[in-house]
Image 1 (cartoon, rainbow, N blue to C red):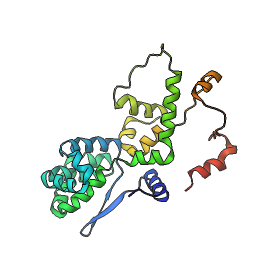
Image 2: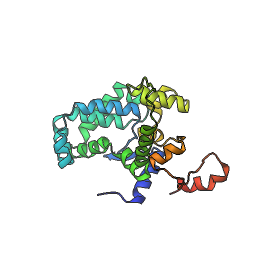
Image 3: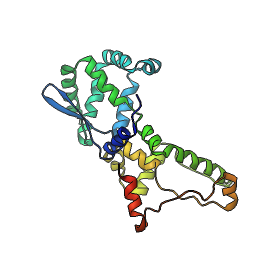
Image 4: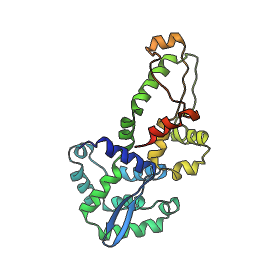
Length: 237
């Protein structure tokens, strides 16, 4: 079922504030914390070991999750354990992770494990937010413009891995350390910062005609104090 506008906007606020998803095991309360880039990389490594049947997962994700939880219980419990820790020091503390794995394995049913696994494997958040905010259309337009402006004499080096395409860019743009990019900000917030960053592209009159771009759109300069009310309106839900 597709979420309505209000629900998506509420989810965006929760993502921005890094609100965790709580669950209980008996009388004990735990949280599934927002995934940082570092945690995403650890979870993806575990996911590869699950041998998920992607076709079955598309048809009946819960049934496939049940099958995986029955056959790969230890790996599923490790993924849940990682997700219940927020700090890098806890996630990388193998002794603490193993104790949490044992607790989860001894106290949750296969059905409960499957439900949590589906929440952890849900990777559609960024895409749905980008679609709702119109970032996907904006990105497509930027690509169209870049293709028209591309010079045959331009040479581009680097960007062969996540180091250049994401980590280095974030460090340079925001002055963050690599540790903060990998562990200090949620993956969702990091990706939305990258995809919705403000860029200015200067086009000649000829290029505008070629791209069918006319001066009938309004752009807001967020740095101009005169626009503070408009900016406040855009970020209020």
